[in-house]
Amino acid sequence: RQMCIRDRTHLDESILQHTEALKITFQCNLLSSLPPTFSQFHQLEILDLSYNRFTELPPPICQLHTLKHLDLSGNRLNLDHSFPDDFK
Image (cartoon, rainbow, N blue to C red; front, side, top):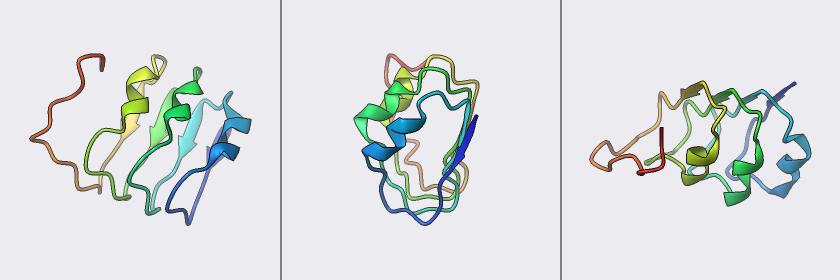
């Protein structure tokens, strides 16, 4: 159960058709945010958001309690922002 999306500047609600995914790859897009509903991926273990336009940790990621690997390489993350209190 894997999902790979390319050539996107944003994600719409259609991704919720795949909430059973264990691995999602959104690398090399133009994403700068995730929709709040992204937190519905309750089984997600691997999330690749590398080489997008994120400047901070997308808030829905904090609700992904099964996440084991997160790749944010190649983004312009502002490390001056601390991680949210609920991020573990």
